[in-house]
Amino acid sequence: MDENNIERYCSVEKSIEESLKQIKEYKQGKRKLKTWREYRQEWQKLIDEIAEEE
Image 1 (cartoon, one colour):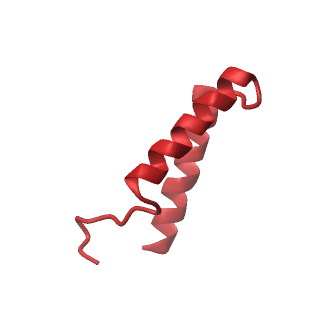
Image 2 (spheres, rainbow, N blue to C red):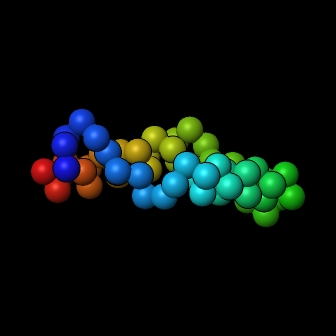
């Protein structure tokens, strides 16, 4: 795989469908919005995992 190209885990259509499903769940109260701290922690974990793979 070319290091400038990243493969998607799913199609664009599937990604949009999942996003719309999540928005609906937020509006129905079935899903809680995350805080910025939670997002930063998730991103840091992902960055750490990628660094370990290299």
